[in-house]
Amino acid sequence: MTTSTKQRVTLFIHPSITKQARAQAVIEELSLTELVERALIKYLPKETTIKKAVNFE
Image (cartoon, rainbow, N blue to C red):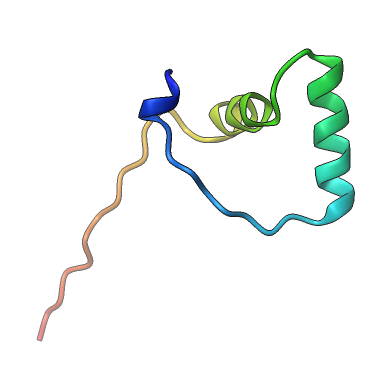
């Protein structure tokens, strides 16, 4: 994935988690972006379906 296909996101994460993630990224020779992206890919289901609620009024 190239930078031009990525979207900037602002997150509020506890400083200790950020510190640990940065350290792990260094260990794995990844950027923090790559580490978080890989973690989300592993966590999220392959496909997400959102169903619209039916209004019976």
